[in-house]
Length: 183
Image (cartoon, rainbow, N blue to C red):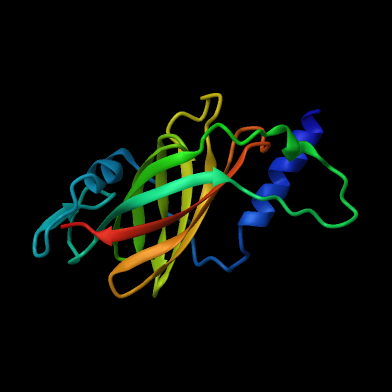
């Protein structure tokens, strides 16, 4: 049974992650970064950087918005007969939620709450491409959701899609989101 769960988790990770070269380690959320997200900094002031040193704030660095999670459709190759995901009735971890992020020098930190649980967000904004990792604040919670999100910066918002799975990779959820600059 453990091999099946591990295989399902690995299949989900491969399906939701794209391959790309990395120039170095990804930024990880910190308590300081999460606290700074809830109150975006106004243009012209300074915000604490992850290292504790003051860094100039970027106008429009705070973004927030909503998502609505639903059961994700799973499409398997023709020869794969695994029916693991059919055990999920789709009635848990569905519904509304909120995302709040801050972007400083292309590094994204933030938090999410709602149907997918309380999560810490880390990632990057490179050009117009937003790439996020969502990790549960309480990884031992029975329905803790872990996932990724991708989005695109538009003229007035960031829109994208979240894909998350539960701890056994049977419960798979997806959500569309739209973030607006915080005022």
